[in-house]
Amino acid sequence: MLAAETRSFSRAAALLRIKQATLSRNVLLLEHRLGVKLFERRTRGAFVTPEGLPIIATARRILTEVETLQTRARAMRNGDAGELTIGFCSSLTAGDLRFAIVEFQRRFPDVRLNGVERDRGFLHHALHAGVIDLAVVTGDLGDPGVRRRPLWSERVLVALPDEHPLVETERIYWHDLRRQTFVLGTQDPGPDLVRLLQARLAEPGYEPDVETQDVSRENVLAMVSAGWFLTLVSESALGVNHPGIIFREVHEPTGQARIDYGCYWRSDDTSPALRRFLGLIRERYPDA
Image (cartoon, rainbow, N blue to C red; front, side):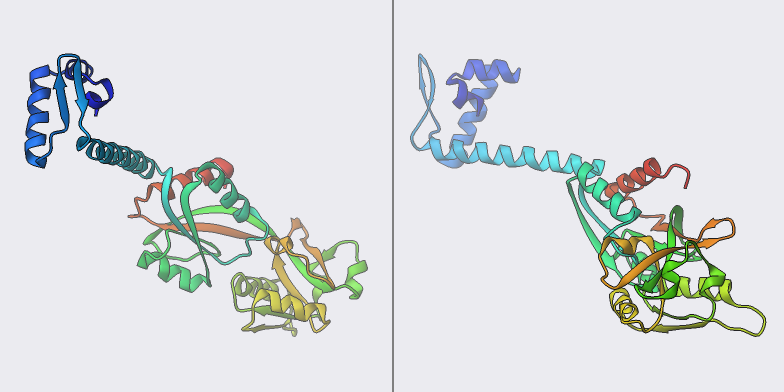
Protein backbone atom coordinates (compact mmCIF):
# COMPACT_ATOMS: atom_id res chain seq x y z
CA MET A 1 0.00 0.00 0.00
CA LEU A 2 2.73 2.49 0.95
CA ALA A 3 4.78 1.55 -2.11
CA ALA A 4 1.74 2.27 -4.30
CA GLU A 5 1.05 5.58 -2.56
CA THR A 6 4.68 6.82 -2.49
CA ARG A 7 5.65 5.22 -5.85
CA SER A 8 8.91 4.25 -4.24
CA PHE A 9 10.10 1.08 -2.48
CA SER A 10 12.79 3.03 -0.67
CA ARG A 11 10.39 5.65 0.76
CA ALA A 12 7.86 2.95 1.70
CA ALA A 13 10.58 0.93 3.44
CA ALA A 14 11.73 4.01 5.35
CA LEU A 15 8.16 4.72 6.54
CA LEU A 16 7.77 1.08 7.61
CA ARG A 17 11.23 1.12 9.23
CA ILE A 18 12.37 -1.99 7.40
CA LYS A 19 15.11 -2.62 4.82
CA GLN A 20 14.27 -1.89 1.20
CA ALA A 21 15.51 -5.35 0.24
CA THR A 22 13.05 -6.93 2.69
CA LEU A 23 10.15 -4.96 1.23
CA SER A 24 11.15 -5.75 -2.35
CA ARG A 25 11.44 -9.46 -1.54
CA ASN A 26 7.99 -9.53 0.11
CA VAL A 27 6.41 -7.78 -2.89
CA LEU A 28 8.03 -10.29 -5.27
CA LEU A 29 6.71 -13.19 -3.16
CA LEU A 30 3.20 -11.67 -3.24
CA GLU A 31 3.36 -11.20 -7.01
CA HIS A 32 4.48 -14.82 -7.41
CA ARG A 33 1.64 -16.07 -5.19
CA LEU A 34 -0.99 -14.00 -7.00
CA GLY A 35 0.44 -14.65 -10.45
CA VAL A 36 0.18 -10.94 -11.23
CA LYS A 37 2.85 -8.28 -11.63
CA LEU A 38 1.80 -5.50 -9.26
CA PHE A 39 4.57 -2.94 -9.89
CA GLU A 40 6.56 -1.71 -12.83
CA ARG A 41 10.08 -1.08 -11.48
CA ARG A 42 11.80 1.88 -13.07
CA THR A 43 14.78 4.06 -12.21
CA ARG A 44 12.34 6.86 -11.27
CA GLY A 45 10.37 4.64 -8.87
CA ALA A 46 7.77 1.87 -8.67
CA PHE A 47 4.45 2.29 -10.44
CA VAL A 48 1.32 0.14 -10.06
CA THR A 49 0.54 -1.87 -13.18
CA PRO A 50 -2.96 -1.84 -14.73
CA GLU A 51 -3.36 -5.44 -13.49
CA GLY A 52 -2.30 -4.37 -10.01
CA LEU A 53 -4.73 -1.45 -9.66
CA PRO A 54 -7.84 -3.51 -8.66
CA ILE A 55 -5.72 -5.65 -6.32
CA ILE A 56 -4.31 -2.58 -4.57
CA ALA A 57 -7.85 -1.13 -4.30
CA THR A 58 -9.10 -4.38 -2.72
CA ALA A 59 -6.18 -4.42 -0.29
CA ARG A 60 -6.90 -0.83 0.70
CA ARG A 61 -10.56 -1.74 1.37
CA ILE A 62 -9.56 -4.76 3.45
CA LEU A 63 -7.19 -2.68 5.56
CA THR A 64 -9.95 -0.12 6.16
CA GLU A 65 -12.36 -2.87 7.24
CA VAL A 66 -9.75 -4.36 9.59
CA GLU A 67 -9.21 -0.95 11.18
CA THR A 68 -12.98 -0.55 11.55
CA LEU A 69 -13.21 -3.98 13.19
CA GLN A 70 -10.39 -3.12 15.57
CA THR A 71 -12.09 0.15 16.52
CA ARG A 72 -15.43 -1.61 17.11
CA ALA A 73 -13.77 -4.38 19.13
CA ARG A 74 -12.14 -1.77 21.37
CA ALA A 75 -15.49 0.01 21.76
CA MET A 76 -17.24 -3.24 22.71
CA ARG A 77 -14.48 -4.13 25.16
CA ASN A 78 -14.84 -0.70 26.78
CA GLY A 79 -18.65 -0.84 26.82
CA ASP A 80 -19.00 1.94 24.21
CA ALA A 81 -20.65 -0.48 21.77
CA GLY A 82 -22.35 -3.86 21.89
CA GLU A 83 -25.78 -4.82 23.16
CA LEU A 84 -27.67 -4.49 26.45
CA THR A 85 -31.08 -5.97 27.26
CA ILE A 86 -33.03 -4.47 30.16
CA GLY A 87 -36.14 -6.08 31.63
CA PHE A 88 -38.65 -3.83 33.37
CA CYS A 89 -42.19 -3.79 34.68
CA SER A 90 -42.99 -0.07 34.73
CA SER A 91 -44.02 2.40 32.06
CA LEU A 92 -41.25 4.10 30.07
CA THR A 93 -43.35 7.18 29.33
CA ALA A 94 -41.93 9.00 32.36
CA GLY A 95 -39.96 8.40 35.53
CA ASP A 96 -36.37 7.63 36.47
CA LEU A 97 -35.97 4.53 34.32
CA ARG A 98 -36.85 6.48 31.19
CA PHE A 99 -34.40 9.24 32.14
CA ALA A 100 -31.63 6.70 32.80
CA ILE A 101 -32.20 4.98 29.44
CA VAL A 102 -32.30 8.27 27.52
CA GLU A 103 -29.07 9.41 29.16
CA PHE A 104 -27.38 6.06 28.50
CA GLN A 105 -28.30 6.20 24.80
CA ARG A 106 -27.02 9.78 24.60
CA ARG A 107 -23.64 8.77 26.05
CA PHE A 108 -23.28 5.43 24.27
CA PRO A 109 -25.14 5.69 20.95
CA ASP A 110 -23.36 2.61 19.54
CA VAL A 111 -24.79 0.29 22.20
CA ARG A 112 -27.92 -1.43 20.98
CA LEU A 113 -30.46 -1.22 23.80
CA ASN A 114 -33.24 -3.83 23.96
CA GLY A 115 -36.23 -3.78 26.31
CA VAL A 116 -38.36 -6.60 27.71
CA GLU A 117 -41.54 -5.60 29.59
CA ARG A 118 -42.91 -8.51 31.60
CA ASP A 119 -43.86 -9.38 35.17
CA ARG A 120 -41.28 -9.85 37.91
CA GLY A 121 -41.44 -13.66 37.85
CA PHE A 122 -40.71 -13.82 34.12
CA LEU A 123 -37.86 -11.31 34.42
CA HIS A 124 -36.35 -13.32 37.27
CA HIS A 125 -36.21 -16.45 35.10
CA ALA A 126 -35.04 -14.46 32.07
CA LEU A 127 -32.16 -13.07 34.10
CA HIS A 128 -30.92 -16.55 35.02
CA ALA A 129 -31.42 -17.77 31.45
CA GLY A 130 -29.32 -14.93 30.05
CA VAL A 131 -32.24 -13.52 28.06
CA ILE A 132 -31.82 -10.15 29.79
CA ASP A 133 -28.77 -8.51 31.35
CA LEU A 134 -30.56 -6.38 33.92
CA ALA A 135 -33.97 -6.44 35.62
CA VAL A 136 -35.49 -3.25 37.04
CA VAL A 137 -38.39 -4.20 39.30
CA THR A 138 -40.18 -3.31 42.49
CA GLY A 139 -39.78 -5.39 45.61
CA ASP A 140 -37.11 -7.98 46.37
CA LEU A 141 -36.40 -11.06 44.26
CA GLY A 142 -35.00 -12.79 47.33
CA ASP A 143 -32.39 -14.60 45.23
CA PRO A 144 -28.81 -14.85 46.55
CA GLY A 145 -27.72 -15.94 43.08
CA VAL A 146 -28.09 -12.43 41.64
CA ARG A 147 -26.67 -9.08 42.65
CA ARG A 148 -28.93 -6.21 43.64
CA ARG A 149 -28.65 -2.46 43.86
CA PRO A 150 -31.40 -0.24 45.23
CA LEU A 151 -32.47 2.44 42.78
CA TRP A 152 -35.03 5.16 43.09
CA SER A 153 -38.46 5.39 44.62
CA GLU A 154 -41.56 6.68 42.85
CA ARG A 155 -44.57 8.44 44.27
CA VAL A 156 -47.77 6.43 44.64
CA LEU A 157 -50.80 8.15 43.11
CA VAL A 158 -54.48 7.37 43.17
CA ALA A 159 -56.27 7.58 39.81
CA LEU A 160 -59.72 9.15 40.23
CA PRO A 161 -62.55 9.72 37.74
CA ASP A 162 -62.57 13.48 37.14
CA GLU A 163 -65.97 13.84 38.86
CA HIS A 164 -65.06 11.84 41.99
CA PRO A 165 -65.62 13.73 45.30
CA LEU A 166 -62.00 13.17 46.37
CA VAL A 167 -60.80 15.34 43.49
CA GLU A 168 -61.70 18.38 45.64
CA THR A 169 -59.75 17.11 48.67
CA GLU A 170 -56.64 19.22 49.24
CA ARG A 171 -54.44 16.32 50.37
CA ILE A 172 -55.38 12.64 50.20
CA TYR A 173 -54.30 10.26 52.95
CA TRP A 174 -54.76 6.52 53.12
CA HIS A 175 -57.74 6.79 55.45
CA ASP A 176 -59.52 8.90 52.79
CA LEU A 177 -59.45 5.87 50.51
CA ARG A 178 -61.28 3.50 52.84
CA ARG A 179 -64.68 2.30 51.61
CA GLN A 180 -63.54 2.84 48.02
CA THR A 181 -63.41 0.04 45.44
CA PHE A 182 -60.00 -0.58 43.85
CA VAL A 183 -58.96 -2.69 40.88
CA LEU A 184 -55.36 -3.25 39.88
CA GLY A 185 -53.83 -5.18 37.01
CA THR A 186 -51.75 -8.29 37.44
CA GLN A 187 -48.80 -6.58 35.74
CA ASP A 188 -46.11 -5.28 38.05
CA PRO A 189 -46.14 -3.13 40.07
CA GLY A 190 -49.83 -4.06 40.49
CA PRO A 191 -49.27 -6.88 43.04
CA ASP A 192 -47.02 -4.64 45.16
CA LEU A 193 -49.63 -1.88 45.12
CA VAL A 194 -52.31 -4.41 46.13
CA ARG A 195 -50.22 -5.40 49.16
CA LEU A 196 -49.63 -1.75 49.97
CA LEU A 197 -53.37 -1.01 49.82
CA GLN A 198 -54.21 -3.97 52.01
CA ALA A 199 -51.57 -3.02 54.57
CA ARG A 200 -52.64 0.62 54.76
CA LEU A 201 -56.43 0.29 54.61
CA ALA A 202 -57.11 -2.86 56.64
CA GLU A 203 -58.52 -2.37 60.11
CA PRO A 204 -60.28 -4.60 62.65
CA GLY A 205 -63.47 -5.91 61.11
CA TYR A 206 -62.78 -4.36 57.70
CA GLU A 207 -60.98 -5.67 54.64
CA PRO A 208 -60.39 -3.20 51.81
CA ASP A 209 -62.32 -3.79 48.60
CA VAL A 210 -59.40 -4.60 46.31
CA GLU A 211 -59.35 -6.99 43.40
CA THR A 212 -56.96 -7.76 40.56
CA GLN A 213 -57.85 -8.28 36.91
CA ASP A 214 -55.71 -9.69 34.14
CA VAL A 215 -55.75 -6.54 32.04
CA SER A 216 -53.09 -4.00 31.12
CA ARG A 217 -52.42 -0.82 33.07
CA GLU A 218 -53.88 1.21 30.20
CA ASN A 219 -57.17 -0.70 30.27
CA VAL A 220 -57.42 -0.43 34.06
CA LEU A 221 -57.10 3.34 33.68
CA ALA A 222 -59.67 3.33 30.90
CA MET A 223 -62.14 1.65 33.27
CA VAL A 224 -61.31 4.21 35.98
CA SER A 225 -62.20 7.03 33.56
CA ALA A 226 -65.57 5.30 33.04
CA GLY A 227 -66.21 5.66 36.78
CA TRP A 228 -66.16 1.97 37.64
CA PHE A 229 -63.57 2.11 40.43
CA LEU A 230 -60.26 3.63 41.55
CA THR A 231 -56.71 2.36 41.06
CA LEU A 232 -53.18 3.11 42.19
CA VAL A 233 -50.21 3.83 39.91
CA SER A 234 -46.60 4.85 40.31
CA GLU A 235 -45.56 8.21 38.93
CA SER A 236 -43.96 6.69 35.81
CA ALA A 237 -47.55 6.34 34.50
CA LEU A 238 -47.85 10.13 34.26
CA GLY A 239 -46.11 10.33 30.89
CA VAL A 240 -49.31 9.60 28.99
CA ASN A 241 -52.42 11.76 28.99
CA HIS A 242 -55.49 9.92 30.28
CA PRO A 243 -58.71 11.87 29.58
CA GLY A 244 -61.29 11.74 32.34
CA ILE A 245 -58.75 10.86 35.07
CA ILE A 246 -57.23 12.98 37.82
CA PHE A 247 -54.05 11.72 39.50
CA ARG A 248 -53.49 12.73 43.10
CA GLU A 249 -50.60 11.92 45.42
CA VAL A 250 -51.29 9.64 48.36
CA HIS A 251 -49.81 10.80 51.66
CA GLU A 252 -48.53 9.00 54.72
CA PRO A 253 -48.35 10.78 58.09
CA THR A 254 -44.60 11.21 57.43
CA GLY A 255 -44.81 12.34 53.80
CA GLN A 256 -45.65 11.04 50.33
CA ALA A 257 -46.37 7.36 49.86
CA ARG A 258 -43.65 5.83 47.68
CA ILE A 259 -42.74 2.51 46.10
CA ASP A 260 -39.11 1.36 45.82
CA TYR A 261 -37.30 0.00 42.75
CA GLY A 262 -34.13 -2.04 42.50
CA CYS A 263 -32.01 -3.51 39.73
CA TYR A 264 -30.70 -7.07 39.54
CA TRP A 265 -28.01 -8.72 37.43
CA ARG A 266 -26.10 -11.98 37.37
CA SER A 267 -22.81 -11.94 39.27
CA ASP A 268 -21.12 -13.78 36.38
CA ASP A 269 -22.27 -11.28 33.72
CA THR A 270 -19.11 -9.56 32.46
CA SER A 271 -20.84 -7.48 29.77
CA PRO A 272 -18.95 -4.16 29.33
CA ALA A 273 -22.22 -2.47 28.29
CA LEU A 274 -23.83 -3.62 31.55
CA ARG A 275 -20.84 -2.24 33.45
CA ARG A 276 -21.34 1.11 31.71
CA PHE A 277 -25.05 1.19 32.59
CA LEU A 278 -24.39 0.35 36.24
CA GLY A 279 -21.75 3.09 36.30
CA LEU A 280 -24.35 5.56 35.06
CA ILE A 281 -26.76 4.38 37.76
CA ARG A 282 -24.12 4.87 40.48
CA GLU A 283 -23.35 8.32 39.12
CA ARG A 284 -26.98 9.40 38.85
CA TYR A 285 -28.18 7.85 42.10
CA PRO A 286 -25.13 7.79 44.41
CA ASP A 287 -27.20 7.63 47.59
CA ALA A 288 -29.49 4.81 46.46
